[in-house]
Length: 258
Image (cartoon, rainbow, N blue to C red; front, side, top):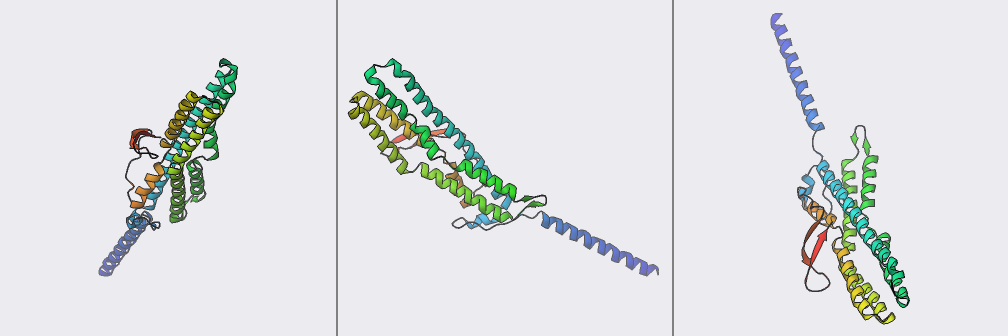
């Protein structure tokens, strides 16, 4: 009987040990990292990165670029309105035969905020869309369909990156130069003001190019890093300066990035 009791106790200890190991294994599975497929064209190494790490990276890109886009939008809209207001204020001070020309030059300053309003950077709206989607797919038990959340975030970052690239492509530089030349031609030939043509035309080119060169493009470079599976690169400083190709002609320009 004692021998049987000892055997029974041994069996109970084995059962308890097996149960403990089972619970431990379940706990390990509960904390296992989630793997999601890499998008088309991305490195296969990206699929080995934990889904939560991928989502955190993508959300960080959107948050960072939305803040930069907001700063860029307000700064350049303020510059445009400021230029217009300053020149409108000068109208009573210039000779009467120059007042219409001064009003024309002042109105031209409104092109900057008008252009931003018509063709805004979409990253701010895309970030709101992403955050709303993530909120809608969050439950008390945890996030729903992690890979679906990753896929949606990848899609919105890609759309924002395409939009940033479109805002700074060669066509935008050409448009800036053509519009500046047209503005200068009106001053030179319409108002017969050669000095105003040279000064204002040149200023328009400089302002237009500076606006393009300071446009946020971080989503473009971040998406390239993401597709390589490189999620550890720190974001650039809020504003950085450096030499870069002029874009519309041979030469270099001092570029700034918000």
